[in-house]
Length: 633
Image 1 (cartoon, rainbow, N blue to C red):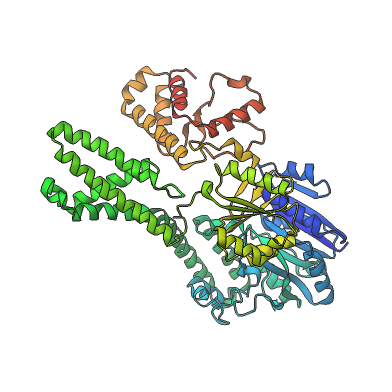
Image 2: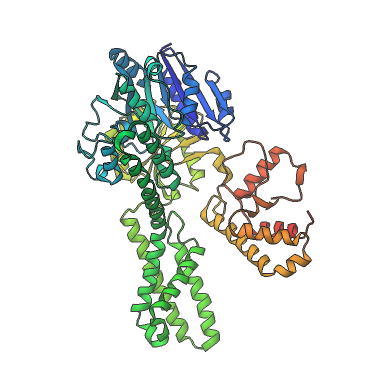
């Protein structure tokens, strides 16, 4: 047998299905086998493999054993001359396996090989080729010199930026997302080190391959897409700790003789990077509220109305308090939800005007205060809208104003497949803007023609219909159209879902389409506000609750848990069945539908959970809580 493909999966069912389709296509004409090692997924991945890919050699673990151990489980059973360790969030071109096997056959000293990887936006992933993270290389990466000088042969060695992107070359470190390995080499240098739970194991194995007298190669003639799911977590504290702790294990194992400098450097970088991650996430979320606060303060300070009518507001502290109140009020109206919209701050300021105007009218009985309050609210609204427009025009990530229903979409595929893909997008995007279809084989499918269409019609999304296009052709088009500003998605042959670089639109999404669904920020905010208000009411009435309500003492404790975010008053019905992808909720104190009780079938419970998420009604929660508080349990 020539090739054994090993895929370790954990809760990425849709990506896994797409990956397996491409793998079996690429194995055509090659004697090979495919392993899937599942680390106790709960999203139906195991059932998917058994149902749709019976030829896969499935290892279904009953616990998450980590990346290294899971790969080793399959490697020990592999019969291929070569072993490929492949991430499930990848797309493999039809010619990749044949090209790599031919290259490895022609280079007997090659113990491992990595291919050219692009991400879901078509851009080159620099980790396709990496250098050994020696103390010096790691230091340059940690302090940021590798980012400032990526092409430098001295400072940019972590990603070997000085090596051409499209030329084959010996390298030191392979990426664990796609590692072609000679089985004989693994028998000599050993398998993955299982002390690495996640991250770092590819560096360690690559280094041991070179220590064993073999070479690692970067081979750009073979190309894959790597959606790089962990990229969305790189600003998270958890990622920082896991990654740098893996680096610390590697340093202790291979560079312990460096006097302890490298391990100390790594541990220091863990805490510095964790602090930077926290600060980055905070600043990203706090930027717009801070700008709004500054805007309100400036409006109050510069307005000619304020010193005449309300001189006390001229105090900076008073201005800040008013500004904080306006920002909080705006947040309640969804003014900081993504993507940004103009309407929430307008509604918030109108509501403020109505409430403030009513109070002033009741106190003074004149219209002057009301008119001047209206003028201030108008100036503040205009300034806040201007802030949002500037952020949008500057293209600051996360602050765009374009919404999916206004998205212009280009589908590349047959009329039938394109129609199905656009219909799914229409439903998951709450509608679409301008749409068009380009049929495969037509003159418009050249990269140059497609680039003109994207530019001319300001296309926001390009959808490739995988049933009508080759996987390699999709990879080529994504790479050549990467600078057009459009987002790329792949509609699967089974028409069940569409995969993008950071999203999966599937038939399951049709359960959660409404604007007030729990998948939206407004829906989540409404549920949380209700939880907080009910909890505060119970705590304020604590003596009466303790004396008059059944289980009063327990209700007070539950109110504290809900207030601190550990629980919610109402949650999903418990079910063991595989359900559609629904928004995550905290575990509920009371059953979603108390009237139904245990008489509900599993299927009915799944359906009711979906309906609850799709069409959230705070008053339903209030009824459930009111009934639950009066019930002895």
